[in-house]
Image (cartoon, rainbow, N blue to C red):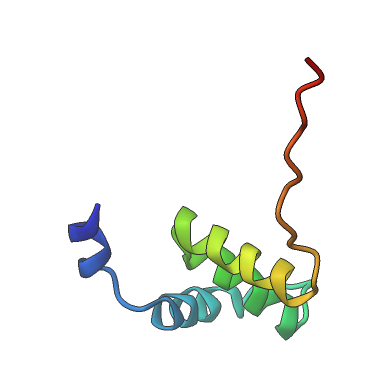
Length: 71
């Protein structure tokens, strides 16, 4: 898996390539196209990292509470 990651170009380069293909799509503005291009170009781990960073930036990421055993 690390070997596959080394062979991939950086995410911004891949997203720019996908965005160039999405320029022909009608019905979406440029901001929506760039968001979709980023999601389509990212690997599953990169998508999870993007999601996690956005949730943390909004302040919604908190540690889960441990359940106490009642016995």
